[in-house]
Image (cartoon, rainbow, N blue to C red; front, side):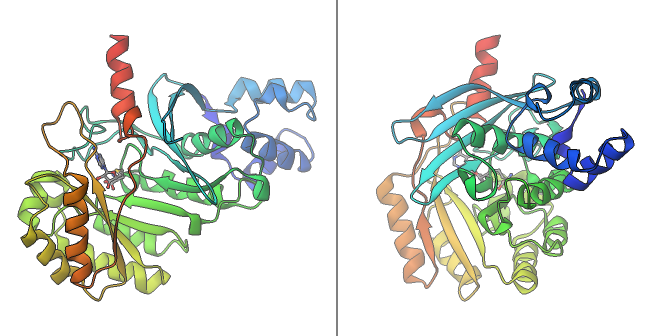
Length: 348
Ligand code: SAH
């Protein structure tokens, strides 16, 4: 696999140009063009020989959209292919203020959560920073967006396949590239990172100087029951996660969000609501309730809308800030890893 120049910061590309006996301003030209989604052959401001030289060593765009599904609610789901033909997914959601893109951070996932399709075959490999950025670049280009204020993608969520904190260094490099001036320039304020709760990495993240929205998949207030839904819970206890969240708030001033996938007869009881209230009351956090997107391979059942709102009312009555996530794209295999799985099956 060739390295992608989308992995490089503007400064690194400028240095590369100097190594190639080019003026450093060429670096800016290349950087801009790559973030707009161009291939080397399309950067016609460069001498032809330089375009060819770059093409011999690097790839410009490491990610391509190979399939696009559009939901009746306007949500779009992309199937992206990578250089080594691995497949990943992204979801594009339209809101009043712009577009939010949900991206993947790994091919597959090693967390193996009970309700999620991404972990069914384990982790295949980490994505590079350029492959994460490439998803945003592709979608932005498709929407006719430019850079900076001209961008169409205004928000990014790291909630697709993969555990971002299990691919920590690449994720952090990606976040710096995404927010850098001269590129798409999407502030980390407009980025949410969701983790299954890898505690040591949550502490590291608090020291990165980002204004990132930290989102933690909780899914149960009881360690023992959480372990049945999320194997990673055997490693990190809920109290450790809460301490790491507290630290995140102290360091960044950002309140944090808990995701809670409601599974019928599993984690949706009154005792669950009561324990959540006990754990979270008074903390600078918000609870985002998610109705399970049922995955064929799993026999877990979603709560009804009514049950979800009843659970939400219990939390609110107990003093928690909470919401039920809008259901989007459920007709297009909207949940993590579902489209990729269907596609792989159809190929076989
Ligand atoms: N690994 C990270 C980020 C990816 S999952 C994490 O665990 O947070 C992003 C969110 O989607 C998580 O809250 C996850 O629990 C949720 N999710 C995964 N599969 C789902 C499904 N089938 N229905 C509803 N939510 C799901």
